[in-house]
Length: 167
Image (cartoon, rainbow, N blue to C red; front, top):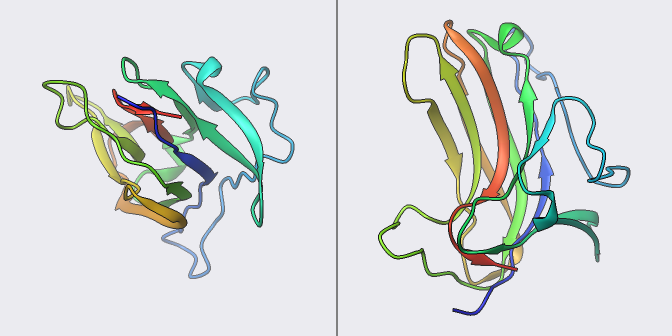
């Protein structure tokens, strides 16, 4: 299996239920991000698979690589208390000029842009998201939106590559 390209320029935006214009909680263009020392509330599980590179017309972007056996990600931990009951939208620009083959027995494996919400008294978190379409060299706007449950205890937004080869 040949690794394929996956490039993500990540921006997280929240549209507020109380404001027509919306509240931007975080937006990241990676011009000043130091992957070796992430700011508070930023998250990554496998920093060795992340890099920041210049992309013509986009500036600095996040690149994620994977050799198929893991799920490297980059994301934000959001303040669940402030988001309870609010409509939120998460967005990321991504491109995926190659293709991928999921690991055997893992048809769900693919690159993701996701919003994950852990709700009190619920075993599994809720997921909302959109996947970049493979074989597209152009930038794709990936978005997902939902209303945060009033019992939400944890809200995260991230981009990740699940169990597929990507470079």
